[in-house]
Amino acid sequence: MRAEIQGARDALPEVKLSTDVAQLGLETIKQLRIDSLRAEITLFEAARAHAVADGRLEVLPYDLNEVAPLALRARRSSFMVEFLDNQKVEETEIHSAVERVIKNRSAQEASSVSPDNNS
Image (cartoon, rainbow, N blue to C red; front, side, top):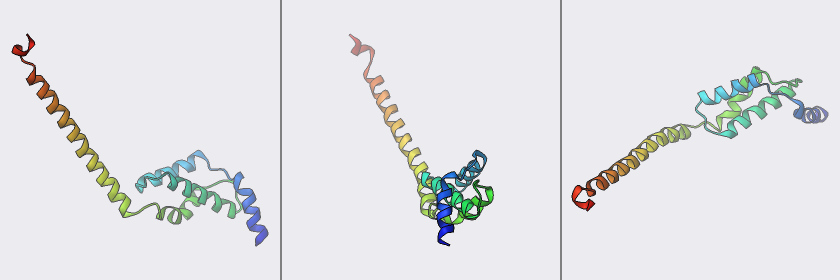
């Protein structure tokens, strides 16, 4: 068992993750609305480890499917989903406030410049 684990460790750097399989992982993360670079790293490293433990040097979609629940569960939470939803609402409110201030300032400056003040 020890030799098997060491062999897998030694082979791990050789395990390839194709662009197509990586894209599947990225699309999965996007669909789950996980906003974390660590989610990608965790998913892909777990998939590579699963592949090498299965005796392969290439990650398959199967590997993503097998490790995704464990790899992504900690990165996905209702807190983060709510936070991101609230962040969008807050950003809209903040942008609106800034735009109102700019508009009000422009209106004040325009009203302070009158034909009588130009002499």
